[in-house]
Image 1 (tube, rainbow over the protein chains, first blue to last red):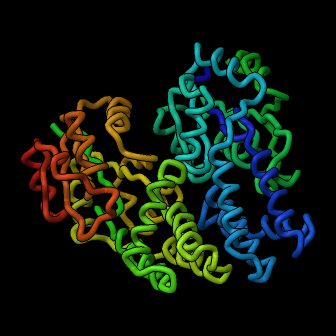
Image 2 (image 1 turned 90 degrees about the horizontal axis):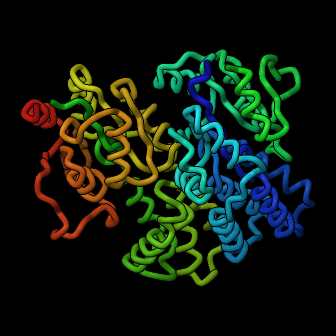
Image 3 (image 1 turned 180 degrees about the horizontal axis):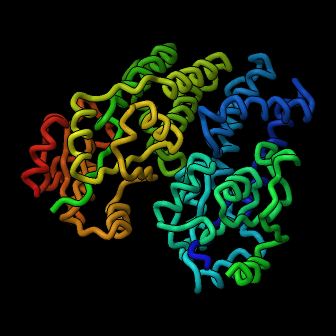
Length: 230
Length: 230
């Protein structure tokens, strides 16, 4: 019997990666005098990975990593106008309209009638709260958890706090690394909905992909699966 | 009967404001060619307030505001070396040692034997988690809440989730604005421990200071007060 269904937010309920990809393209144009597009992407990703432990996830972290990349690749030749430009991109990202993914609203409406729903996302606290508010989906969730990362121990704590056993829990998300692997590890139900595009960090090598999770093409297929699960 | 005691973190359990003040002084030195110390502080505070809704609290937000202030005050004359310098200060702040305030550890040890304790702080999710881990105080807390801001509705939700009435709840903190006013408003017990110095944003005008809260000089006096409360 399913007692709690949790949803990832970015690229599960609403578009997110697009925003980062579009901004990366702008950075590549800004840094075109110093490196080609591939070189900019590679340097930015390396900087993001170096900074992940210190800065965490989210737009502010991404912005600081863009600045470091710009300074490094240009060998200190960029100036305050370029830095201001990068800050303006961050502001645009933070204010960007929330674009729901297909079937998000009606699936949550349908499932919330029968199950407690949780939003469970990592990223920046304020930014995720703001997106949830602006998404119009806030009313469907009984619980909102914004966490600094998603590992097996985080999911275990969550279930303990809610007094649930893993088979009573379903996690739905676009990331094998964050939404699927740790949930399968603790014995919960994981539902993977592959995104149109994903951040390299969220991908996992093929040999690490576990058995025993469910894959759907879109959120509209979720209520049928939940019915089967019990 | 008290059923839950919640503690603010920054400048309640450990030093925090000092770190910001020290970094502001560095920024004032960096910008000395463009404005005097008072002018830098004033411009930075204005930028922080403009950005608060968008960036929220924490070191990354502070860093972006420092950059904007530096670019504005210098009228685009600062360059990538100065920006790199500001990023390096942010890294130093994020890695800074956690310095506990007097009586923090023994007070938590003593109270946690009899009461469920909660850490309730705003700020950056990852940074607050990291400080809690490094503080050595993590084991005393039954619950950790990191919130995007602290208003009456946040406290009301919290009590509802824990099935508590306001008189069963004690909030302990250094900020009248965040830890005292909203808790008095909902009918809970608020304990104010004034900090050695505070960020202007956390202060409240004298006429807004409510009656009906407790003031202590340091955390060591808390167990005695809790005993009186019930």
